[in-house]
Image 1 (cartoon, rainbow, N blue to C red):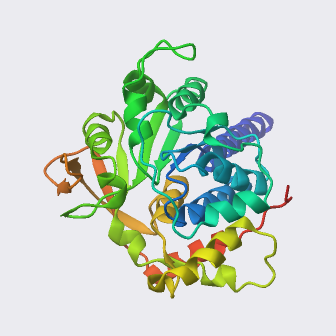
Image 2: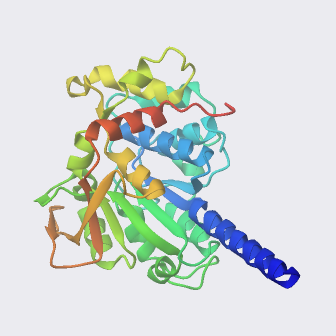
Image 3: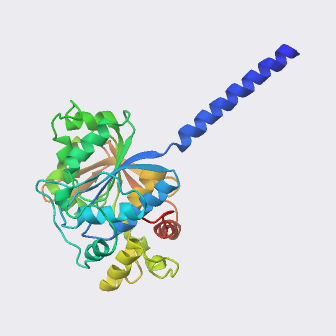
Length: 333
């Protein structure tokens, strides 16, 4: 009986250790690079807020935040939100070559950069986005990084085309293949159409859709079109001195189509990149191709990509995103 008891104890301990290991694996934070066209639209503010909220809950580790546009306030505005959420040291990059320079017609970036702390004063003070990508990816374990892009594919095409450097002796495509687990993108008009993030840099979009070496998950235009957020945020009197609230407070009244809240494309991409698509969505596998005009076509006979399909009631996803967007940092800096 003594030997049986000892054996039982060993089995229990081993089983407990296995369960602990499984639990640790299940709850390990997603390692993520956030790529955004910060400026032209303010749903990016909602997206970076959702990202920081999920990071504070331990679900994601933000490795870097890079801009895919050359809006004059891009680096400084991103820095405002990273600083507000207590992560002022996050790497920030911007494209140094040709890129989209669309501006924010509501001028919310001017307001937040004028009124909240940040270290970067201009895009000139930030390194090239490709440099940030290569440095961060080279330091990560193989197959561990999720890239989420809620803007243009400019940086990702430049990354694929990049040469070996001081950070890695691999080409860009080799580095992506080795280090990246998946790409999650807010992009596409399904089954065919011309969506903003795709058509503004069509050559980059074409290259990424055909050459990116890891799985791609797409949150299309019609997914975020139905999710309208921001009103609970701007009507929440308890939230004060918040660049998130300020951006939505300034921008929503300036566009009649936003009277019920801003359509929230980018937040859906961040949500599924961190938490997975289920139970919010199901997926359809296929392949998104892009032509030289930026028009995309969905082909279910090909593989390599997947797109989100509505599953959970839109109102429930809407409520979740609104709640995450009202998240307040533990320590404001």
